[in-house]
Amino acid sequence: LVLKRLRQLGIRPSPLCSDEVFLRRAYLDVAGILPTPDEVRAFLADTSPEKRARVVDALLTRPEHADYWAMKWCDLLRVKAEFPINLWPNAVQAYHQWIRAAVRDNMRYDRFAYALLTASGSNFRNPPVNFYRAVQSRTPEGIARAVAQTFLGCRLERMPRERTAGLTAFFAQVGYKKTGEWKEEIVLRIPPRNAGGAAPPKPVFPDGKAATMPPGADPREVFARWLLAPGNPWFARNIANRLWHWVMGRGIVHEPDDFRPDNPPSNPELLAYLKAEVVRGGFDLRRVLRLLLNSVTYQRSPIPRSDHPKAAEQFAHYAVRRLEAETLIDAINQVTGTTESYSSAIPEPFTYLPDDQRAVAIADGSITSAFLELFGRATRDTGLEGDRNSLITDAQRLHLLNSSHIQGKIERGPTIAAATRGARNPREVV
Image (tube, rainbow, N blue to C red; front, side):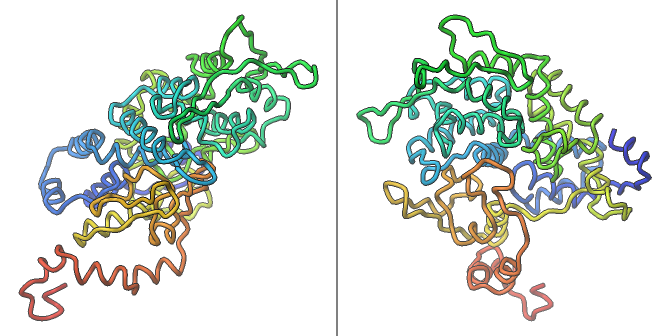
């Protein structure tokens, strides 16, 4: 489908990348780590035509994959202890562990979404409840905004006003109650209230169809059943596009959280095919990831063979992009054999992390470092993809070239010291 579109536009695709490039790319994109020298040598010595597929399969089951892709989901779901999300540390740990376990165990995506949408109870004891707490405004409209963005790929403010009111009505009965335990909160259903005697707004699905509410039914469950029905195009389409974005560097609909009529997919047939694959596979996201990672499109060289203005949006070559802040510092630490310090003065109590903590595995978006801030780590304030700043700046270049931070890692790093031990001159060191 990608090649078909490229031929229609007269765009020449790039060839497959080399084994060295593929291995580094796959390790970084799937697990957020670099391959070790031994892993590189073994891969290059392997002459099997199936070796790339075997690497993909192995990476998808590594604990580092769970760490790295949990980070992506935590960005989307706004897992952050402090302002403006204010989940608080205990809830952050519970929520992060649940999300990571879902990635590790390859929980079906429809079950994952249903657990989040219908959760009630303690934010400490039922982690998915935190979906309803991890919003800046715990109003029906604030919750509807998070639901639309997360599961429909739509921004509430760009939906027709009558549709936003209908969607908001599904979440008008979400309530919050304090307990005697520090920072614990109960999410529960509260009876509908009439404002000044006026009838509450009626729930209407995003496709414009009015919802039928059985007596005593939780409106959230009615919405979840509509969303997860096999014939619903919104849910599967959104996650197919988001996975493509996370793997390929840009969405078929770009940005992936901005589906609207005047932002059409660059390849409608491709998006329709992937949406169908999500449903056909029973919402097994690992199956879809395997499909994407084994594709020729993913494995193309990053060097363009066409200067056509639509070459990038049609995926004629692999999209070169800067590593995320967390992946970059983890890679520097891996190469130099050093560690990094992460802390936050805000969470209660004051927080330090162990020296061997990988940045991608940090649960709390409030805990950071000067490096992560400089390189645009997601703030987790909005859940939008644009919340992560991946622009390359002069300050970042200067930091990598001649900061005392990086210089110290080079000078003190045991990996580099071992590699250069015994060298008599600079050329031998190199």
